[in-house]
Length: 193
Image 1 (cartoon, rainbow, N blue to C red):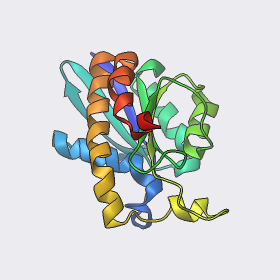
Image 2 (image 1 turned 120 degrees about the horizontal axis):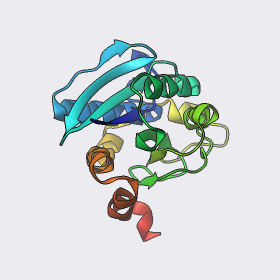
Image 3 (image 1 turned 90 degrees about the vertical axis):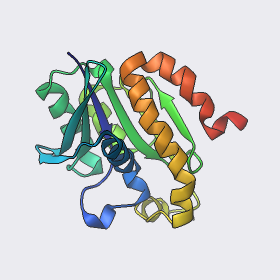
Image 4 (image 1 turned 60 degrees about the horizontal axis):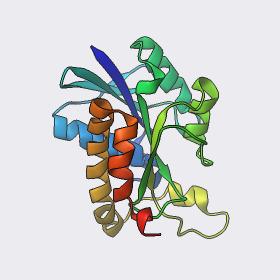
């Protein structure tokens, strides 16, 4: 059976729930809920799995804290013998407006510490879905911004993107990264720029 690993980045613990930096966790929670599956506390992360048309999808929410996310990703790729080409990492991104998103087959970490640590450990050849959280913060205020809670209005604005992200996960598993990028990147708000 073909196996895939989808990792949503975030920080473990109640105090981080609902923060911009935990957007990856929020997307995996939505996917798990829609699939009627539940996360278990396992080595390096909360993990669950489901099947989609004969393919097995593992969902991973690392419990290593953001800056050490690579430890969890590397462990679960090895543990389940999943090829790196079947890894999708979902992260927040202050360079994109709230609710915008960009799917890429590889590339730089864009200043994101979680992506940076994963790349340090396994290289940069893996798919990533960057979800915009906006950047309405004063100079030097980025940490407070990404660790800040979404407002109710922001969550409403983000919901269509969470729905799209769940569809992107399915498409990535069933059709691969290239078709998925062609299909979904045009739905991101940046297309109007």
